[in-house]
Length: 361
Image 1 (cartoon, rainbow, N blue to C red):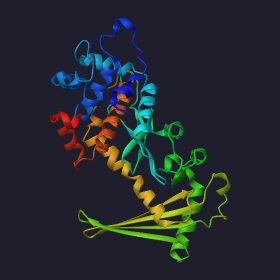
Image 2: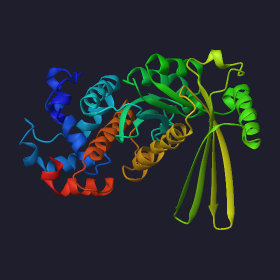
Image 3: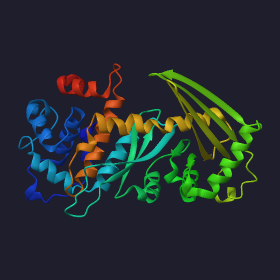
Image 4: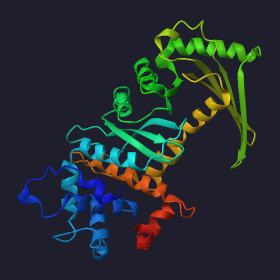
């Protein structure tokens, strides 16, 4: 499914007398410009004008390239739910889901999307990241990080999760979220912290005692060395949890897990131990991989959006502009991630796409 066919199904909210430019043309221009390094609506206009003859090979462009004001107006008024539905249809057409695929759920604040004059807080996007395929599966907007608890179920309901392993940090460690994941025929690995105080304390006490007394637990260890750092990751898991009073309250709960990370940098040694609950069995290698893979959403998505796409510097604030621009970045990143003809960084791919029209096509 190509970009033109994706956007032909997007409802056009504009009245007929104001339609100087086709909506599908506006959308394809915007996504393509973001692939090639655009960060503002002015950039999108400049990019379109510089490649107008190339775009006319597959777009109608009845009145040439839209102005930056037109792009701004359209994306600030475009219904984000309909845009995200369009995004999800496209993902379904390109995503090859695999059994046991790890889907990481995490949130990110668009730092400069706040509007003090209108009392509007910064937009917070909760995204789903497919670790194996390296693509964004979907996203939901919330006004504050604390609202991730309500946003996560909405995001999960949009995804086909059967056979996947869903990983979420402590904010999403909720009974209703665990139940929803199981009802969608997936497994979960949820981080435990203070928001589940008694459960966290019970799991910590049991596993710390079992580890220190060398009780029979499934165990896995990995050692990495690089960038001046020596890191050892240890994982202990048990499914012997019939003693856990809260077990019946968590649908599908099968195991508890401790992950310890010991880092040696020069003369400094640090050690941290974290705790998790899971619907998976007591296989330390699988649990260790799931926990480690969860953090790929920070390195492969959030870091790239900040450093390569300059998301935190974007000042789009009017209407739905910030939310819709976030989806544009996700679409551009997914397309760049899926291009594997040669090993290149995302930054390098964006530069080549801007220079080489055959590569861009």
